[in-house]
Length: 375
Ligand SMILES: Nc1nc2c(ncn2[C@@H]2O[C@H](COP(=O)(O)OP(=O)(O)OP(=O)(O)O)[C@@H](O)[C@H]2O)c(=O)[nH]1
Image (cartoon, rainbow, N blue to C red; front, side):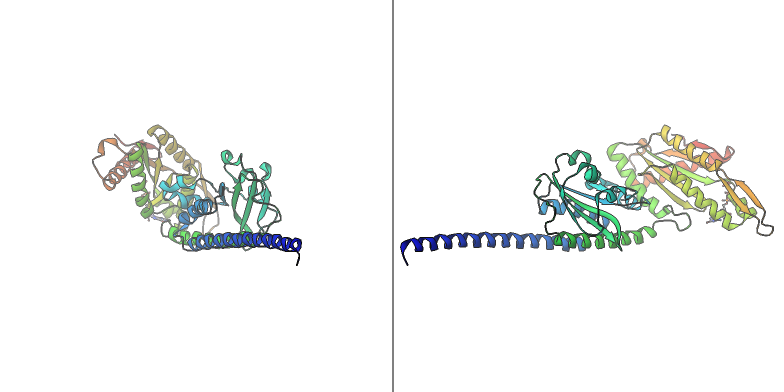
């Protein structure tokens, strides 16, 4: 072999070795990527509840794969997820990037398929609503993973990169497709578990929370109110002359009235407020970060919505229909500053007793009214 041919061979050899090195490097990177992917998948499967799972989705992938923006959309028509996640209100701040729209509209605008991930350039019109407004400005490319159960879009996991070439249309999406499936299954299972937990905390007849939940929530709200020096209001509502509704129109009609009143109260509240059935025909409401004046307005709105509601009772024998009006009495108490020497349990008992006492005054005063507890 002459020296020119030898040199050409050596050059070719060198190029091949370099190519091999770079392939090996890529394989190692892929192996490392797979390992991190696997690790996160195990964590998803082992997540302890919905809050844990959502937190992992929003932070785990961002850190492990250096993704600029991660957002999660879950369709929440009944605001059930929002209620579940606000149960532990202290953790709600950790959920930046989570969107819980009541309708799937924003998702349907972004996705052309319910099962295939979509990669490509960021389009503010189609993708803007999937990311937080202040974070979407710098996003240049996106990977959108549809989360579907039984062919229905229940949400989407959305990765955004400042690098336009990071997520390119037409590149392999097998791994992301698998991730979408795993996330959707994990979410469904976590939501079902939360539903089970919640069923032990809600009242079977009215669908609002039960007394056990109220007592738990009350301690959390009292702790928050004391820590941040926020006012906390408590309303106690009792349906007026409820016994006569049962006696005159039957127990099922009484049940219907209770169900409707639970919904009327709920309809006047904000997302962080809590209504629970305390017992029989008594409801209790917690209004965090609410002044006495505003709590009085809310109580008045509840009282008038109950008084304006009409129920239709059909006589079991004759079938004659009759319109029934119902009223309610409400006692209102604020968490008192002066009692700060007590622990949260003691404060809760004082607040509830004060609202109950005010309710008694409302009954004595002629019913269908709101009475403030004396400070
Ligand atoms: N239909 C129905 N009735 C209930 C339920 N729980 C309690 N009750 C009835 O609620 C009635 C409460 O009556 P009372 O405590 O005497 O008071 P009231 O008739 O509301 O009169 P005032 O409170 O004084 O205005 C009782 O007759 C209970 O049987 C329920 O789940 N369904």
